[in-house]
Image 1 (spheres, rainbow, N blue to C red):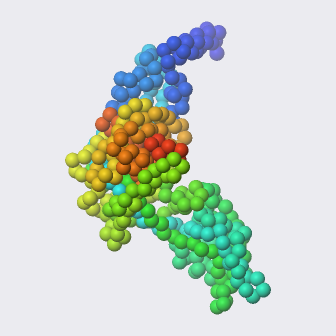
Image 2: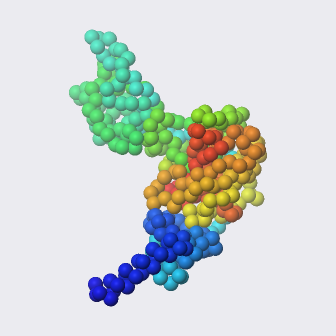
Length: 406
């Protein structure tokens, strides 16, 4: 590099540093943005209107004109420019469709079948002196998910017995998930009174519960819901699923949230009346396709989806049916992170609406997936409640949900 070029680089660096101090140019936020997040033209317009990254920073969205088949304009790049003409950073983005989606906010019943078998107790059975006794398992903990036996995948709980019968020496290799990490154990089997090999574990392959529908695509009825993963209930395993069903859910009551005692919605759903399928379970919720929409969507309630660039501290609302009808409740977004890494705690908010606080105490279990609206767009979904304060909660960005749902 020539001396003159080095001098210009130093001057430019000092200029940018000075502007960061004087005009609040937020370089930290600009460089914390990940590659490949989702955004729209209107999101970029909002950033420029609010001067989100400082008064001397302008952003623009450039489309990628390449196409695959009939699909066009699915990707692009956001360029951050100092004074509107000095490029600072260029970030690849996926374009959010600018069409309306149906707003969720209603409770849903969820039932899924897991891939593999979920261990539900630390207790196992052990043969000692001809007797079978209950002891603490040497290999597995409650919440572990058994995925393979002797390198053969476990499709469901019924598959376990079949694979154990193929054991020749009473020892099997088991691959299992613990806190989303794959582990392996060589396990000595038991023989029951009929001489059949057994693991001596309590396990299951189905799970059910309630949550909240977030939004539904108008064209193909593809939905996103829940906002966080279905887990094993003991650790952090995201349960790999082998299909599932979604149902309408009737609210029976509410246990109000209190300090250090999270509340919950009490609901009932009938598993013979499925409204759709569950195709995916990921860190940011579940997704699938609705077969029927009655009781789940209101054709008059629609909005566009906004990406993380559209989110800012200040007034927002959540949509929920905890009162028996779908209503918007005022919240205040306290903090929003641009998130360089995937996480389901994208923003922190506080419930301001006295009606919701009177009904539920704030955020309760079962409200996960409730849409968060700001400036007329669905910008996220409720995910968790603060144990120390039921009026405070976390939300996940809509673009995380969209990105991982397909």
